Image 1: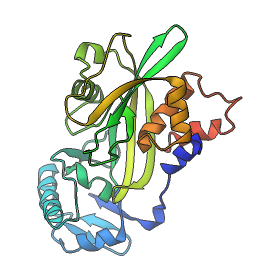
Image 2: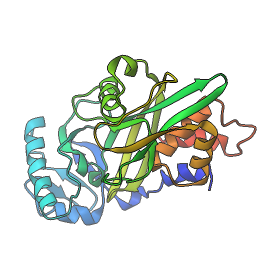
Image 3: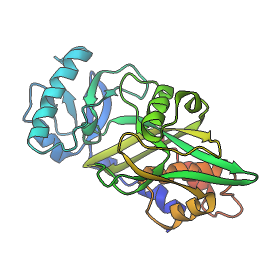
Image 4: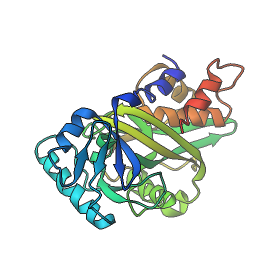
Length: 283
């Protein structure tokens, strides 16, 4: 295994295997033909052509589109085709951060290949020149990636929340980091990837933050999503990401990005350095 293997695992998809999903003349996602065949049963909402899937143009406006799509998604969920319903909606737009065309249940986002965003916070502690990082072990009851290792704080960005608001919300829920401390998290960039997972295509933008924590701080989970936290020397974090699959797939990318930015992966020592840097941002 290698760092580059983790990058490659997040670039595993063939765009030719998907049909563009078009809303109001704008491509917003990518749909598998076999899933499109099920959508064809809902002709008043979805129109399926040989090379595209369209949202019915008669559906005008954000509210009408949202309501019509949600009715279909509930039927798909009841039939078992859309597991893991979250009761949480994400915006759907022609491009990320553009005004939404409608809102969609989070569980359906990969099925439609919609770009989504989230936040990941690297919580770390300095002791002189040494760095240690807080890692969380995901609950065995999590719908996705149970028992995998995770950042101290990570979560999807629901409709209506800014990036910073999401950091504050997730910090409190996942690690009992209060707003005053969470506001000290420093934005360091974004990671993007497109990969086949969760019965569809994950197309994500992860806004990455670094948060240097006091040496006496101990995170406590409050939402049941993390089983426990451990403070690891950065060398152990590095080896675990490089040599195992213990970390959740996208959390590995966040660690690699941290290691590069902090000079812990260097171009003279890592032969895949440029490929790593380029692979963290696919768009």
